Every structure is written in C-alpha cells, then in structure tokens.
Amino acid sequence: MSEVTLESLVSFCKRRGFVYPSSEIYGGLAAVYDYGPYGVELINNIKQIWWRELVYRYDNISGLDSAIFMNPRVWQASGHVAGFSDPLTECRYCHTRLRVDHLLEGVGAEASDTMSETEINQLFDDYRHLVVCPECGHRDFTQVRHFNLLVHSNLGNFTGNDSNPVYLRGETCQGIYVNYKNILDSTRLRLPFGIAQIGKAFRNEITARQFIFRTREFEQMELQYFVRPTNDLVDFNLWKQRRWDYYINILGIDPANLRWHEHEKLAFYAKAACDIEYNFPFGFQEIEGVHARGDYDLTQHQKFSGQELDYYDQAVDQKFIPHIIESSSGVGRVFLMLLNEAYHEEKLGENDKRVVLKLKPALAPVKVAVFPLLRNKPELIKAAQEVFDQVKMRWRCEFDDNGNVGKRYRRQDEIGTPYCLTVDFDTLEKGTVTVRDRDTMKQTTVQLNELVSYLSSKLDY
Ligand code: GAP
Image (cartoon, rainbow, N blue to C red):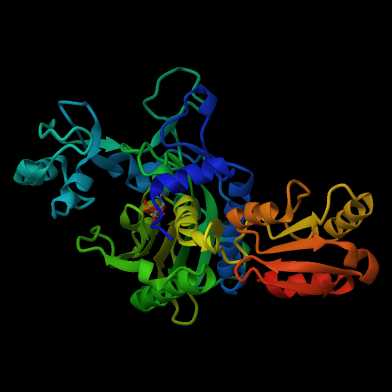
C-alpha cells in the first residue's frame, strides 16, 4: 500500500518484539541493540541458512568459531592499530561528529580508505563550501582527524595502563587467518578451500544513525576462500556470482533492489573489490563485500608472527602464500534488508487491512501457529494442545487461543508465520485440521496423520 520507511520498521520491530534499544530502561546505549523473541529467531535463521549454503553445500568449506579476544599483535599485523580509522570532523555549531567520507559522498566526491589525514583534509577543503551539517544545516567544521575504530578492553590488564590493550575484534576474519595453518594441518582441506565463521565484531563507529544498519556491536558472516595465486580473479568472479545468486534465490530478494558497487580506489594490496548494495529506505547501501585480497593477510601474519604460513603445492612442487577471496556480510544488515523486503501493508476489501511479513518460510521466526477454534471448549483446547505438541519440537510454533480467529491470523501475518492450523469440531470427528496459508490466505483441510509431512513439504528448505 505505501512505501516502507525506516521509522515504520523501527516501531514495528519494537512493537512486535524483533529489536529493542539496548538497556532501554537506562536510556539506552548509542548504536547497540538487542534482538527480542522474534528477532532472535530471524537472526538464527539468517545464520543457519548462510552456514548451510556455505559450509554444508561446498565440500571444500569448513567452519570455525574463534575467540573475540586475540593477541594484540594480530591487530598490528592486520593494519588495524595503525590504519583502521574513519575520518572525523565536528560541526562547530551543534558539535555533532560526522564522517567526512560520508559528507564527501553526499556532494559527489569519493574519499579512499587509504588517504592520510593531510590528503583527506585537502580533499575536504576542496568541497567544504558545498557541505552542510545534516543535523543543524550550518557549514562550519573542524579539521579532519582520523579516529581509530578498534574497541579496547582491559582484559588481563591489572596496571590500569592502556598502552597495549587487548582489543575486541574489529572483524571476524582475523581469527580465520591466524587459524589457517591449524586448519590445514588438522584437516584434509587443500587449495582451493574456504573457512567460514559467524561471530560478533566491535567498532567504535562515529555516526550511529540508521538503526541496526550501523552498530557498535554487530555480527559478521565471513568466508575466507584460499586459492592459488594464479586463480584468484577466476575465483573472485565465481564468488561474486554465487553471492549475488544467494540473495536472490535463497533469501528471496528482488534483484531490482540489489546492485554492485565496484571500488574505484582499491587498497594497495587488493586485486579487486566489490560490494553488494541493497536499496534500504535511506538509499542503496552495502550489505556485503566480495574482495580479492591477494596474499596480504597471510603475508602480514607470517611477518609479524615469524611462523611460516606458506602452502606446499605437491602437484607443482612449489611453496607459496595462498591468495584470499573474501565474502563478508553483516547479520544486522541482512536482517534489516529482509524486514524491509518482506514488510507489506495490504488492503483487504473496503475497510480492512493487514500487515504481513512475506518472509520465505525458512526465514520466518515462527513457522506454525496452532489455534483452537473456541477457547471455552475444553475438548477443542485439548485437541489443539495435542496438535501443538506434535509440531513444536520440529519447528518454532505458537499456541494462540486469544481473541477471535481473524485477530489471531492478523497477529501471525504481522510476524510472518507461514501456516496457521485451526483445530475445530472436524478435528474431533474426522481427524482433520484447517491449514491457512499466510500469502494466499487460502485454507486447506489436512489429515492429522499427514500433518507433519504436509508441513515439511512446505517449510523444510
Ligand atoms: N573483513 C572485512 C570487513 O570486515 P567491512 O566492509 O568492514 O569488511 C563487512 O565489513 C560487512 O560487515 C559489511 O558489509 C556490513 O554488512 C557489516 N558491517 C560492517 N560494519 C558494520 C557495523 N558497524 N554495523 C553493522 N554491520 C556492519
């Protein structure tokens, strides 16, 4: 019926138990969010599907769960201590801190990640006259400073001196790089092979708007695919295609809402870099990066750790450092994309409407809802409870006997439940239930003894 706005998604998420501001009763914590009862189900489905589509689908990909805390040398080797920063300016009028690369983007200029403070100040000076503060509309900004995004902890520090902190990881892939040799030595994986990991990452993001799109604590789903140096661009294109197809065929995203963004200015070590962008209510923004990272990461870790990280290729009797193709996406961004894509307000007849989340069944937080037709008939409640017990350990299910059946349908439509089962007098007499489909709203009669296989055929992916 109408365009989905970010505000409508934020309020929907809170009202229906998908996302809450963190520690809200204390006024919240900027750019940190909690996922509620339906949110956590959707998150788990997003992660499970990603895992299956990579780790289970491809015989040459294995999983990993490395720790959030790592030896701080990791972050020196990776370049994060010296260079993982965003260019920051402050509006002199309202004191809002702003990312200069975003301000420049807004006036048609592109800053690269590798620019020094002097270079970005020069670029900003060239465009300053065009830039206005998005908060107050003034045009007076401080000098640009690089602001490091790594979050410090005091783990193991009993002196109070923060000069060599243990960081909370800023990306999950470093845990993959430093385990590459362990995995090679303890499994039968040989090039090309991939290591996949899902886990939390932390960044001191400067600007914290756009809800769960950019948060200070978030989860990443990262694949690092190790390849022969001669093959990296072929594998890069292979993964570009696979990841594009994934969003369309597996997650059900409309291709019109997706596009590629090719990086014009590459990091010095990168061979190629592209992002998949989604058309959010605030415009096209990145959901995933697919990058050909060359041998940079392993070479750096070899240098800093003093450990040999090269690969012996028996076929050609050669040693070399494998190149890496990376696919890196954020769970929260995929979550927001899926809600935006699935959220529909539909007109039903003249005076009625419904909100319906048209998520693919595999993603739906609740798969099945069971309703007794009437709540004051103990025999119907008992039969409905038996049906519920039959399905609840197989899929996430809800039992609802509150209000009339029409209202129960609306509640389930709103959270995207694909099937509602109504237990009525026919259940008692003929052993059947009515199964109502979320999208078509059509009802089908199914025999109780065929219910699980009927639902499996619709829900299992
Ligand atoms: N290892 C590569 C890497 O971390 P990135 O572009 O910084 O690259 C990859 O992050 C993905 O992680 C992004 O495409 C995005 O989906 C997600 N992401 C990054 N920063 C985020 C943040 N502050 N909040 C939510 N998601 C974020």
